[in-house]
Image (tube, rainbow, N blue to C red; front, side, top):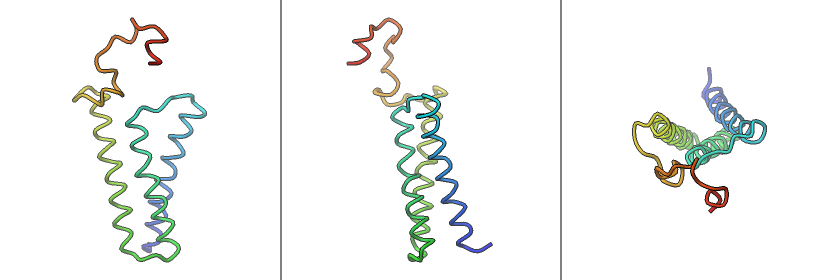
Length: 110
C-alpha cells in the first residue's frame, strides 16, 4: 500500500469515529460529557490534516496527524479510567461527589 492509502485510511477512521459520536448525540439522544467533547477536537484535526496531506501538502504533516490521533487516544484512556472509577474525573463532569438524585431540577440546571 502507498503512503496516501494509509493517510486515507487514518483520515476515514477519524471521520467515522467523529460521525459516530455525533450520531450518538443527535440520533441516539446521548448528551456528551466534557471528556467526550475533548476527544472530538483531535479527531477533527486529524481529518483536516489528512485531507491537506492527500491534496499535496508536505509529508511532514503526517506526523502532526499522528500526534493528534495519539492525543485523542490518551484522552480516551483517561476517560475510560474515569468511567471505570480508576481515578477521579473533572468535577464539572463527574458531579463532584454530589447526590444528583436528591437534587431538584433547578439545582441541576444551576
